[in-house]
Amino acid sequence: TDTAETLKARVQPLEGTAFLFAIRRHQVAMYMGKIPSDKAITYADAGVSIDAGNALVQRIKPACKSTVRVGCDADLGGFGGLFDLQAAGYDKDTVLVACTDGVGTKLKIAQLTGQHTTVGIDLVAMCVNDLLVQGAEPLFFLDYYACGALDVEAAAQVVEGIAEGCRQSICGLIGGETAEMPSMYHGGDYDLAGFCVGAVSKSKLLPVAVNAGDVVLGLPSAGLHSNGYSLVRKLVDVSGLSYESPCPWDAKSTLGANLLTPTRIYVKALLPLIKRGLVRAMAHITGGG
Image 1 (cartoon, one colour):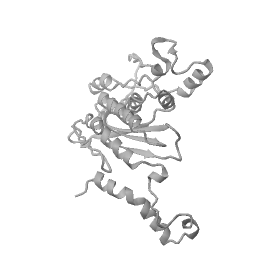
Image 2 (cartoon, one colour):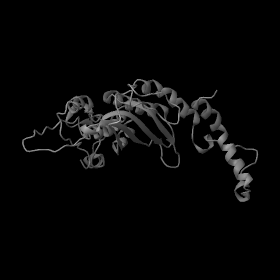
Image 3 (tube, one colour):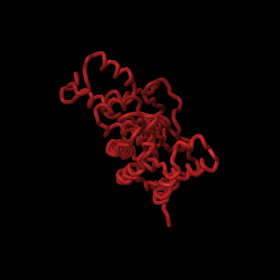
């Protein structure tokens, strides 16, 4: 009996041949005249490596399994991830909260410096910190990784960073998608998107009314987090510095390494206070926050 993974492995090598057969059946003579009838066109001919994709899935499985929490199934390879709200302790009075976000042009610094281990944490942080503002507990996370040519090592480092972010958030990494698109991205370019779902009882949704006399607290960031990096990169360009230069404000690191400091995740610090009803409203300070 096939699993989703074994079926995918058997079917994908046949897709190029099946596509050509469909074209022949529709008698697209002008196009087919340029392709020898005895040559099968494969994904590899188009610049896509099925083997690299399969190798990446095997590489990241342990990282995904390390994020398992009550209610989730972190097995990869199926068409969707599962989460059991009842097993996680939620009932019919529950509201689901969903967020999606990316890392922005901070990714360019990771790509230029070859340091891919922290941007996955950024991806998770940008989503789960938004969930917290609604009073929601992060439950599960999915990622989308798009590139021109799949570099298994770089992609694995990114996903391992995502898994670390999920562990910091007590959030299950239950699936994702890797898209290899040679005509859309070039060289070592890649882009990331994250999707997170959380839950909160209707009676505990935030914000609630803020009143005169309430205490306002500001929580420190870990650095620039994941916003404003188009301006940051412009300032680096005009300053004459490189990302390998010593960091002007931290002699112990390079400029690139310092700018890649991951976004702080506030789940463990704030969720206990939220559940005790001690927080009335929050703002996640990002680009427009």
